[in-house]
Every structure is written in C-alpha cells, then in structure tokens.
Image (cartoon, rainbow, N blue to C red; front, side, top):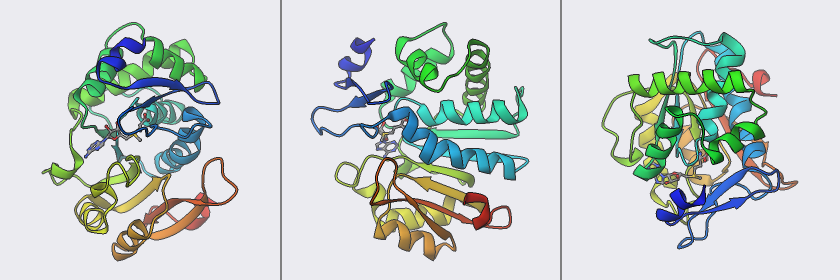
Length: 246
Ligand SMILES: C[S@@+](CC[C@H](N)C(=O)[O-])C[C@H]1O[C@@H](n2cnc3c(N)ncnc32)[C@H](O)[C@@H]1O
C-alpha cells in the first residue's frame, strides 16, 4: 500500500481515529489533523456538503486539494444518502484540484478498479457499505469523465462558479499563495456562485477579509478537536442562512 505513495515521497501515517493520512517528509506537514483524517473530514466538510446538497436542487462543488480524496468520497456519500445514484449528466457535480499528478492518477485508478488498501480503509472509516462503495465509485468516475480533475488552482482559467467550496489547502507555511488575501479575493470574485457556502479548517485574517469583501456572512466554528481556535464556514446568497448551519 505504502509503496505507491513512497515513490512520490509521501509517507503514510495513521491518525488517531484509525484513518490514514499522508505526510510529505520534506515539509513535515500532514494532510489531516493527527486526531483523525476521517472525523476531521466529517466535521469540517461533509457536514457542510450535506447542508448544501439539502438546500440546492442542483449544485457545483469545488475541492481545493484532492489529496487522498476524503472530501470527494464524503461528497459522493452525501449525494447517495440524499438523491441516490444518478446517471450522467449529473445535477450535482464536483471539481477537484490537485497539483500532484500521481495523487490524481491513484485516485482515478481506484475508481476504475476493484480495490485499493488505502481507499478501502478510508471507506471503512466512513462506515461505507460494499454496495455504497460501488455507487460512490460510479458517481465519482462518471463525474470525472464529465468534468476531469483539475491541476493547479492558481492557474485555473475557466469561468466556473461553485456553490459549495471545500478549501483544504495545506497551511500558509506550505502553500503561502493559496492563503494570500489577493488570491482568495480573486478566487471568490471569479468562482463563487451567487449562492455559495465555503468551509475550511482554517480561520485567518486574509480569509475573513476576502470573504467579507465578497459579501459572505461568516460563521466561526469551533476548530476540529480543539477547545480553543476556530475553523471557518461562510455563506452568501438566497439558498443559505445562518440557522441552517447552527
Ligand atoms: C491538506 S491536503 C488535502 C487533503 C485532502 N483534501 C484529503 O481529503 O485527503 C492539500 C492538497 O493540496 C494540494 N495542492 C497544493 N497546492 C495546490 C494548488 N496550487 N492547486 C491544487 N492543489 C494543490 C496538495 O498536493 C495536497 O494534496
């Protein structure tokens, strides 16, 4: 299992809820919170994706940072729980950004093959049944046929606007540009739909200013697995209101 990732210099680590994460040794940063990659995803991302899917009859979701695909898997699970399996063209779509080509390839391979230890482990941590796993893979494979995965978010040239934004970049120490006010401002100006909800594990001044400049109402949530500290959930437009997220 580890060899695929080791070839691209990641080490596989286990987080405290038993779910795997990746660490890039040169940088030392883990992709997820050490307390639990799966439980962090459920708290920060899936809870908001679910609200978005409930509120919108059709939606476009964007994930910044595919990594191991936890958010994508939880999005497909949320969809399955709500509207069931949908053939293409999909009313609910997802676009994933990832700069490491091997991570995209490895995830796509899993979608088109029987099993892979790490993704099967992730599915188990989400308590996904065998039947659900098949449908999740079909939903994602169909979606990525329709809307292929993207690479670098900073050079994205299309004009897509998203309703649900899952912003899961590395920290600003590792991915400085992705957390700059200028980049966040331009990204939201060009790619946030009129009805949009954004969720991220982070809570920074740059993000707050960029969200406010683009008309978002901000809800500071308690950070995952911390008594102090916050994560960010923000929304704008007619489909969302603060009560939905309380
Ligand atoms: C914190 S990890 C994401 C974890 C992931 N959401 C998961 O569920 O496993 C951040 C990811 O962003 C990717 N990344 C870094 N810079 C990027 C960029 N400019 N555009 C797109 N992806 C980027 C990294 O390669 C890494 O996989």
